[in-house]
Length: 142
Image (tube, one colour):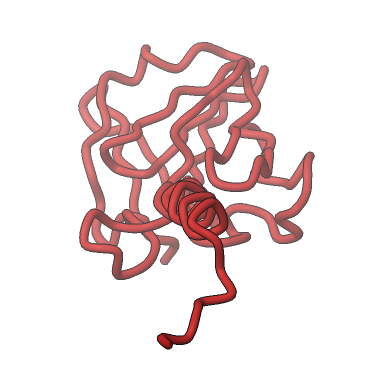
């Protein structure tokens, strides 16, 4: 007489149905090939766009370059990497002047780079930023 498995068909099916759902949170933090966080901060200066794209007291997300640029009320530009300091996920949402990480919900102030909502505990990496010929150029801090 063959041995009978202790797992019922229902248990096996329930486990199989839950497996794809369990990996969804990690997929948002990974590259398409699954080798870790997607995206990186600029390693060289990049031209982001026209200097007038960022109004005083506002911020502009440059998702293709993983950069956010803000302009304070005095007109001074600041730039930060939009790679979340919690798990390395690229931030893809700007709500007013608050950056929202899609992976675990960390939030950052785009004007200062500081954390406003955990789980992140470290500020965003500040980048150098300047205007050249009416264009915003940002890159790694020198």
